[in-house]
Image (cartoon, rainbow, N blue to C red; front, side, top):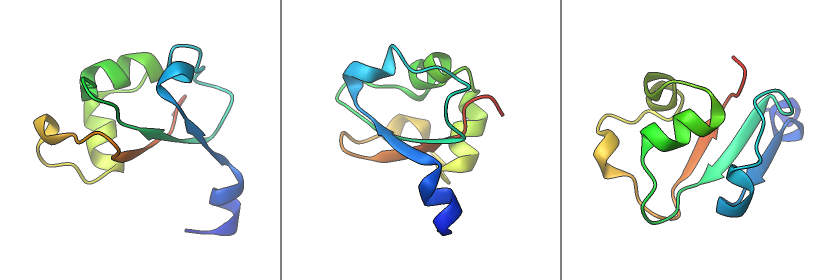
Length: 76
């Protein structure tokens, strides 16, 4: 990962997810919590499930694990 990409990333907790906005960061690292689904995460960040799957090389969306980190590019 490039230094530029690291500088544009921040981690989002479950509590912050509801307040996340799709224009504040170029890249978000979201940590999956128990009960999360790609559909819910995608809706909160205003991206598609297909984008989440592509950005994170996910082949089976039903196999999210608590603690798994997802790269999200809001507003793209």
